[in-house]
Length: 302
Ligand code: CP
Ligand code: NVA
View 1 (cartoon, rainbow, N blue to C red):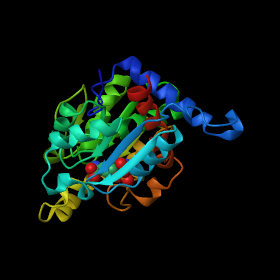
View 2: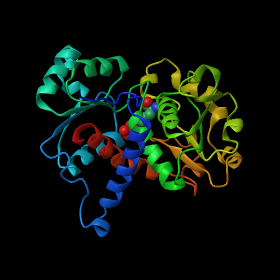
View 3: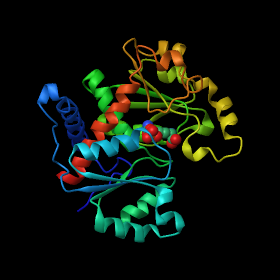
View 4: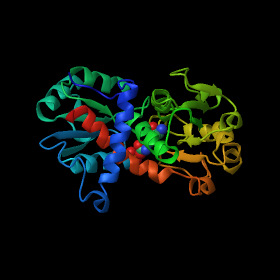
């Protein structure tokens, strides 16, 4: 029975724990000085993985491409506009063809419905590499980063401030699975729905109070760019939710700052905080590679 990873809800708590442990081991084993080579170097031998990007990407695309290669597999990277899908070939026909040739499909799409439809027909695992609704690959890398910094995840408080978007939703889904308390502070029109035990507030200070992690993301996500006047309106409405030094002071002294990137210093986060001592953003970016390698092993090699 093939397994997909479309929202993160597919994982059980013990599987997430194992995935994070495996990711940490793969990370340690990647350092030749520590392990004399690459742990997992053959776990995807003889396997091919299609990596389809309908939207731009830096971290996701590179980390999956390099990750598949490091596990001994073959990545096939495609832009959406290079596929016949963009000329009207159906999603189900595409899924059938992909399933005859590759062992997994990783896809970044403008539509959650499209990847659900793809997964319904495909006989190989389908991984969500970002849709406007979910970004579960980001959340597993973020949990790995938090585990590295704090040891135990259970009981940590993560305050997400800004737009209640795909990244916030995935943190809610996977945070709950890991026992993390997730609080989202957003203006009413930008707030996440009640989901997965997340706490919702309109007050960024109340969210930041006692937080172990302060997290933010862009104010204009990829699907939002088409709305007329979106950037100006969002900048105005979300300004009180900027992650700045004052907000950080409300969190624990030991708090870390997280952002999935790309960042827009001066908008959702100040440069001082983004590049400050408490920032964990570069570890987050690197951990995309390790967490996704562990995910591919879970879906393909077990
Ligand atoms: N965080 C993230 O998914 O980055 P990219 O859009 O560069 O892949
Ligand atoms: N919320 C952002 C995340 C980018 C990685 C977007 O969807 O554009």
